[in-house]
Every structure is written in structure tokens, then in C-alpha cells.
Amino acid sequence: MERVQGIGGFFFRANDPEALAVWYEQHLGVTRVPQSYDQQPWRQESGPTAFAPFEKDSEFFGRPKQTWMLNFRVRDLDAMVSQLTDVGVEVEVDPETYPNGRFASFSDPEGNPIQLWEPGGVAS
Image (tube, rainbow, N blue to C red; front, side, top):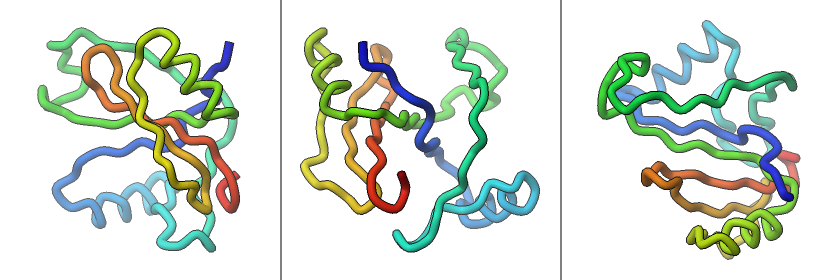
């Protein structure tokens, strides 16, 4: 069975994205997204990751209408897409291969957006 390898990105809304990115970089060491393919993105150390769905009315996340998109790194995008479509998941594969890899998008059963990323080029 093909499995995701980890989180390739986490995308979320902010009132002032630039200021928030600076804050994360200054206070947590999470460097901002590179502005060119010549720069390297923030690299995380390997280790455990908690993945836990919460009740819809949980106050843990703060704002009730919090939106997000989760990006998972995958080893073989074609195999993962095939595995998902074989069970009826509609997946949209981006036809372009970018300098940092290939992408596909779909939604989970509750409509939350998920992106798959097969790294390649400068980001692998």
C-alpha cells in the first residue's frame, strides 16, 4: 500500500500573512517560504507527528470557522493517485511538473482540501 511520507506544507489564512510569517521565523525558527526555486525551504527534523481529528465543536482550535489545507509529501504521486481513485476519491493531478516537484489535489470526506506533493528538483 502506498502511504504518505509526511507533511509537505501547511497553508492557512491570516489577517497579515507577512507579519505572521516574520513572527514564526523570529520566534520559532520556521523560515518563510522561499521566493525563488534557488532558495531552500524550512526543513524539519524527522520525528513523530500527531494526526488527530477533533469534534466539530471543539474549542481547541479557537475560531469555529478556522480553515486549512494540509499538504502531504509522497514518494510516488502516480501510485498514490491510483490508490485513491481506485476507491472512488476524485483526485485532480496538476499536469505541470514544477522545479520542486508534482502535485495533486482532492478533498477528504468532510470537504477539507488535501494536497499531495511528490518532491523533485531543488526541494527534494
